[in-house]
Length: 148
Image (tube, rainbow, N blue to C red; front, side, top):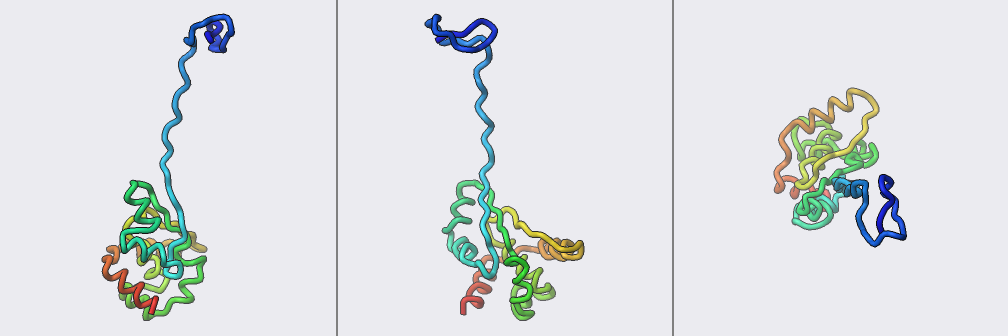
């Protein structure tokens, strides 16, 4: 099929396969991101990532972004976690800050999604995430304590 001059629309009479308009452009590749719930309650993805497998590790190996949602388990975790757990994770942090830091320390995660009910919660979350991530062996110890 050919085209009508200037229209780019095909005609049945012409044997040519040329078009007068430019060919359609390929869409730009969209970045692929996975998002999954990751918290000290939903710790399976954390544990798997520490062992080099599971959705976080697999996506990271493929160069994909991995977003952790619900790091405070819908706001419940600060009430479920104890001050002793926070002290084990990182002395001096609140339970919410410690739980956020534990999730953010998971190798392979690129973003932690959270919401806050007031500006003070944002400030506290940012303070926790500005500190050094936990080493993998320390995160393993925390998960072992939680599984005991």
